[in-house]
Image (tube, rainbow, N blue to C red; front, side, top):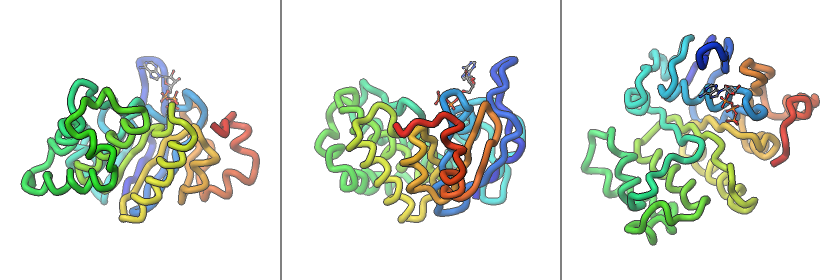
Amino acid sequence: MLEVRELEVAYGPIRAVRGLGFAVPPGQVVALIGANGAGKSSTVRAIAGLLPRRGSLRFEGKPLPAAPEAVLRAGIALVPEGRGILQRLTVEENLLLGAATRRDRARIGAEIAAQYERFPILGLRRHGLAGLLSGGEQQMLAIARALLARPRLLILDEPSIGLAPKLVEQVFRLVEELRATGLAILLVEQKARQTLRIADHAVLLETGRLRAAGPPAALTADGLLAKAFLGEG
Ligand code: ATP
């Protein structure tokens, strides 16, 4: 579905991602894991069109456009690290922004209602400022907003960061629920072991390069994770 080949991302002389290749098949959860600074965020930001990149990116058999809005229209939505919620807008205004690239405006109201059903707290707070939500609620809002773009691939960049353990569990459960609806998910995480428990496939990055890839069991089995300094989180 998404095919990444020979991806290169650089910040001036700093080569953050080097010759990276991996794929996300339809309906699967692919975990992109690696220590702090391994290049995970750079990879997904480049896919989303937020950073210049080199290499070949194909989505559903076609070259992926480079501009962020075009990537979104093509069917890939990114929930960025830090969530990117607009704090001074209401919950509902944030959700409406998620649907900004949609042409089928008529259906948006019903889909926002569906998100309120999925996340009742967002419905209760719909007219409240997004900045007043808790960290976990803001993460839910960021995901709901991304879903309003009706993506076929959802990219989550460290959705569990800063959340209490119970909420982290909730985020992982949500990822499983979303996969059950047929959505493909690229999940960036530092909480490697928890992530590998739900992933169908894993990609381990080390200093910008592919260190290992395969079924989660293969990565947990041979001590690779310990060597890559991954915490349990
Ligand atoms: P984290 O979990 O901390 O986000 P990561 O695996 O996502 O880590 P990246 O954020 O992609 O890693 O960073 C990869 C490399 O690129 C690091 O060496 C980092 O210092 C460097 N880097 C990231 N952003 C910038 C930037 N804006 N300018 C210069 N170097 C950067």
